[in-house]
Length: 109
Figure 1: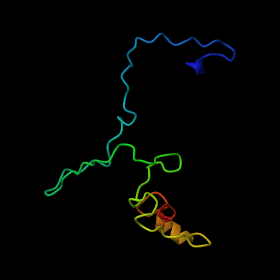
Figure 2: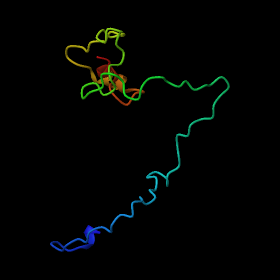
Figure 3: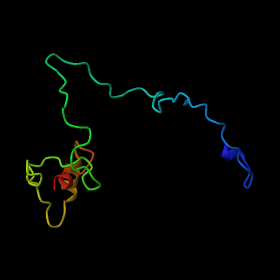
Figure 4: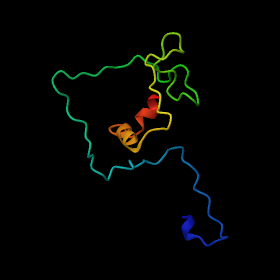
């Protein structure tokens, strides 16, 4: 490994590839799943989407495509809630993160 070589010493090239990748160990295989998916309950069902893998309008500014827009592609289906002029208070920010792990108020604005 590079750590074993002295500074200035040449590091040997890797062996030629056989064309097959070595088996990869799952990075979390040594850990217990502390959030297993619960078994289905009576009445549960899965709904499969017909949406394409990449939605129309996906670009650097709209990573998920043009979601939540009316048929005209411009008008939002849900009107965003504007942020207060001086920003959110500490309590508002705490509340906006609760249950989401991101600032849902800023996301909605």
